Structure formats: structure tokens, C-alpha cells
Picture 1 (tube, rainbow, N blue to C red):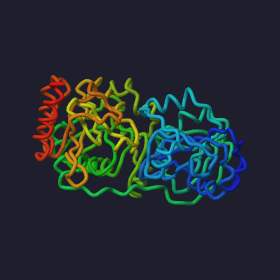
Picture 2 (picture 1 turned 135 degrees about the vertical axis):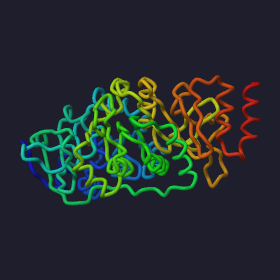
Picture 3 (picture 1 turned 30 degrees about the vertical axis):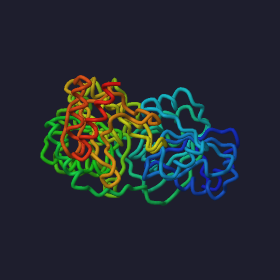
Length: 423
């Protein structure tokens, strides 16, 4: 039976020693978190676990109280300093492994999340972002849900009985949105190179951000594209509305746009709530290599901070500090490698810091962890071109990567590689 409470009552339910899972993306329970931040003392001795999305979820749970603790899988602008100071336990895991960890290994005492209103059948759906929540719902001791009338309720989103909520509270606040990033000339050129690698009928996974937006813009001439992704943004909606995305050639979930989360504008949220072809699925499905391998011509598209001449990818560390997280890119890259006709693409700008730093580097720094192994790499794209390095010998792949580095750094990279090859 569901007990209806107010946000300020949640603090009385929590106590020291509890492990509390907090839903992320658009399911973040902001009414509850705002109240917990104001109360503070109720969080003493509580461990918070969440998979946050940079730019959308902004809570550093370790800051709720000096004796609160937190486990994170992604670094954000809000928690990077706490991770560096060891106030937050950062665990580097691929998305599929986070899901398994939450589902099979971690005790969960309380789940906090936000949901749409119940339907006529008395059930509530998980809205436009399911991602990790299904991993913990069945095992949690208590489930506390904010019921927000502004939360979209897609027809094909996981559903649970309203009675599964031990406590519920009503809230009335906007669902988190994510502004589109501005696209540079380099981004547009990257988008053009990636579009040349995409064929009509391919099924695409793509992330969010300026480069992803540029790539989506470059696909306006493609036909019958499919989508199987960890998240979707405004670019997916635009292509679907224009008829470029139909999913008609998908060998699995034919005609469906499959996603774990929806991140973008208010217009996107409204579209997602009503789009008949959208299927919201948990990470246990979207990032499962056994599922992805059944999708022919699956193309994984992700970005990175840097790629070295061995083909190693760094997507989560800067200057030896945690900048973001491992995320789901490697899950998708490995799934693409198993797909018949599958490909994976790492797309990144050739330079950073106003052109002062090359993002194609001779070797990752000793204090930088590798996100994707050199055995995971397939295509690499910058504004200077695209190269497939997957089956190239070590010397040939280094040459290919130097060819798409910024011209100002190519001679230096040649010299550094020669020194590495001699050592």
C-alpha cells in the first residue's frame, strides 16, 4: 500500500547505515533532494548511489552532510572536487557493469525517483528515462516516488504498480532539460566525415553534445535509419520527424526507436511522451552485447578526449584527474564489433584549448587511465578525415592517425612515434 507524504517527511525515513539509490537523468527526484539539502542532518551516515548525467544532474551527495557518503560512476562539474578529495567513492565501470553491480551486488535500502502520474490501470511508467532504475526496484527495501504531472509517460516504457511505491508525494516542477551545444566549423566537418560512413538502413547509437549534434545534422540525407541507443536527444527527434529514421530495416525491434534515456529540450520531452515508435528500455537491454549483436549494421558513434597512436582511447580523464566517466561507449563499441556489418566510430576534434593541444597524442600519459583498449578501436574521425584502423598493423595505424591530426602537430607526432618505435 502506498502512503502519501510530503517531501519534508522523507528525511524522517532515512537513517544512518542506509544505502540510497537516487535516479538520474530526467527521473532525478529534485523535490526530495532539495528538501534533503535543506534538512542536512537526516543525511548523516547515509550512503547515496547515483548514475548522474553531466549537465542535467547537479547534486554532490557528499555535500548534503559532512557525514554523508557517496558512490559515483561519473564525474560532473559538481562532484569532481569531492572525487579528487576522496569524499566521493568513484568506481570506474562500463554502463553494463554498473547495471550488474546495482542489480546483483549492492544492497539497496531506499530508492528515490520521479515518475509520471499513474494511468487508468493503476500503474506508473518510468517515464522517458529508465536507464538504471529497473536494476534496483525489485530489491529495494523502500521505494519513494515523486509523482510529477509534467513527467511524460510514453506508451512503451517499463511499468510498475503504483502499490510498489511504499511512499509517494506529489510535485509540480519542470522536467530537467539540456540545452543544445553550439556547433563549430570543425564540428560540422566532423559530422560530414561521419555521415560518409553511415549507410541507408544502418542502426545507430550516439551520445549527446556538440559533435553528436553535428553528426545528426549530417544525416539528413540518409534513409531508413534505426536507433538503438543509451540516450536520445533533439537530433533524433528531428530525423524521425523528417522521415530519415524509420527503423524499417532493423533486424531487432523493427520500427522502434530504442533508448534508455531522453535528454534535450522541452519539445523533445513532449515528443517522447507521445511518439508511438519510442521504446524506453533499461541499460540491461540497451547496453547488452547479446542484444546488440542481433542488430545488423549497428553503428556506435561516441566521442573522446584523446586517442593515442596505439589506438587507445581516453574519454574520462584530464591531467590525471577524473573528468567524466567510462560510460557506455565501450559496451557499444564491443557490441558493434559483434554485429553483422557493424562499425564503431570515435569522433573528436583534432585540438583542444584553442588549438594549443593535440587530441591525437603519441601515447596516453602514465597517469591517464585507458577508457577503450587499442583492441576496441575501429574508425577514428576528426575534422581532417576518417580512418579505419581496426585491422591495421601498429605502424600503419599510427601513420593513419597522424594523417587526421591537426597539421601543426603532425611532424611532432611523427618524431614522437619514431622514438617510441625505437625504444
